[in-house]
Image (cartoon, rainbow over all chains, first blue to last red; front, top):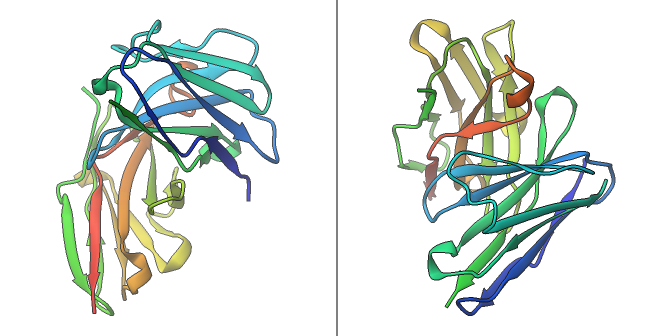
Length: 114
Length: 117
């Protein structure tokens, strides 16, 4: 089946720095990708929709300037957490939709901000 | 407001026993319904989905789910659990009614399943 990868799988950064997370579709093209955030023992919350060649659309309550999304190609979307703070520590997951409403999820990136 | 509820945060089941995970939703119209499983280090995997038609849906790994419109429920079942079924299970709904919502999923809080020998 289709595969979505994320890099890095884990990252630790200091407060105030920025971190970039990559999401790649390995064997298919994805004009749209979704970014989710998952807190420990909680559900996935949709953060934004990444659109190739255009601006991302953000869900209500998500800070656009904090979470920068770039969909530079049909196989790559990036999420940059800018000026990260400990409260940004979370598990970030991307997905790419497929026909029939199926979605292919990446394995996630664990961000820890110290 | 639209919502997805998984009432059970944690379920412990013996290997070989049956399993049922509950999911209730509140949407204006019947949404698309999904069950995903999340294992450590792996992406969410789709177990099954329901769009319309037969209310009993068969999925992978021996799972099935039943859509009950009157109860706004989409419960997941497995007749005999294996140790490898220990994981986090998420119910999710999607609303196909508008282009803005296309592909977007709203997830329940998840149910952690522990399988004992």
